[in-house]
Length: 345
Image (cartoon, rainbow, N blue to C red; front, side, top):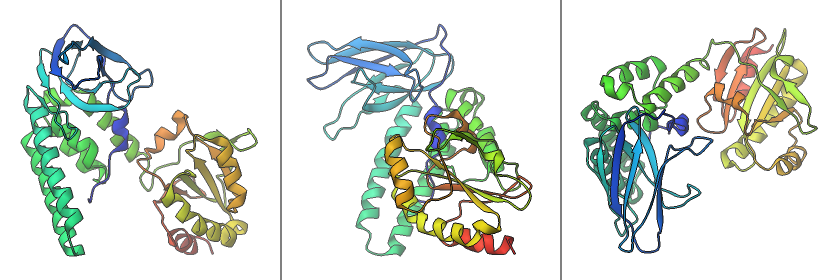
């Protein structure tokens, strides 16, 4: 579909707890003995509530939230896999059920019911997209999906589902339009944990737009030495910050283009600051010489520094001028070479 996932929603589970109870009741299939509610994607895996499941599969979970929040329901003590995400608020009473096809619908308020209806409609559109026989038919389905999302946002501005859709479907929207859309939500929704994280993401995205100054990175190279991005910036230097990983197929397709550009322009002041998001450092180290990645390579996995670049997906890159300004972003294929040709004489 047209719009990309707003990856920074991965932090949307943050909220502080107060004396504001909500209750989730439900029934799970045979084989589960406990259920859990957590603030999703928080490093500490903050547990909101846990409950035992009786012999018939029934459970009652009680938790507390200060603001309307997104929580993760799981049947696994270690949080994975998450069965479903649920919108909760103070005083809410929710009911969760299980369907044979693996869905976990939640009822009890407009937000959760709207999400269920949206997901069912999207599943039908996904089926139509897969069955489409021509690119034109696929585009028509994609347009219907976009229209469904827009209508769902407009119909749910008084509840959390609108914020969830903005967070997951509107990453490509310009920051000023995103701010305007968020401002159109109800005051209660704007006080939610999701909107707080959307606003943080908008600020981060705005900081990486063309014309903005670069932000410092200081990460370790394969030898364990810390290399600061600032050490590469300066008169006559053009630096491409490239976020990638060895496990990323699209990233690997970009490498030959980067190698070509590096060979052509390195002696003229071009440098690459390659930031790997690999978890296997040894695989990363072995990959570099095998693919002629002879530029500055560092590993950024687990570092909070990379958050300031609001990387939503990889590959992702930012070209920095000798003056330390972002002059281009998301260059693909021959884009790096063509841009450098226009900048370096």
